Amino acid sequence: MDLDVLYQEIILDHYKNPHGKGLREPYEAEVHHVNPTCGDEITMRVHLEGEQVADISYDAEGCSISQASASVLNDLLIGKSVGDAMGVLDEFQSVMQGRGQVEPDEERLEDGVAFAGVAKFPARVKCALLSWMAFKDATAQAAAASGGARDE
Image 1 (cartoon, rainbow, N blue to C red):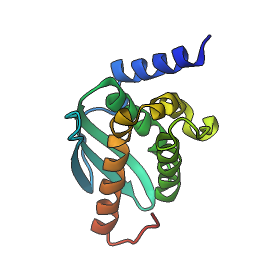
Image 2 (image 1 turned 60 degrees about the horizontal axis):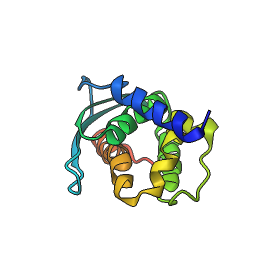
Image 3 (image 1 turned 60 degrees about the vertical axis):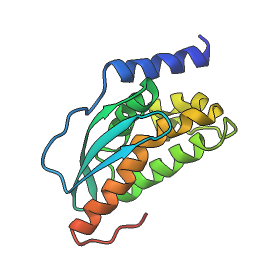
């Protein structure tokens, strides 16, 4: 099977069956991000238990790429330490900003590798990164709310 076709199927599956969608409590921080280029929006809540990402919940509207990316983020980051989650975020961001030249680590990014093809289309990179930037902001706010300084 063609890798591009497989990647498209992964993105469509996450779009049609989003993981973690729906705002939940408890949470320490809630952020709202908008991609002004296309109008995609996400409201995200992050719940930390100590140094662990205990829950990520969100409500989002937008294209299949932004929606699927939020679903993949949810799968990849819940249960990780904040430091590990930020490492995965950095890796995903590196792939997305690599214009198709950065080889994703499938073991680390799992379904996130499906977005490697998106990196070839600069106009869509912001769509894929919307939820990830919301997570970064919400986690920083949650860490500040709990009074703990976290490495970013």
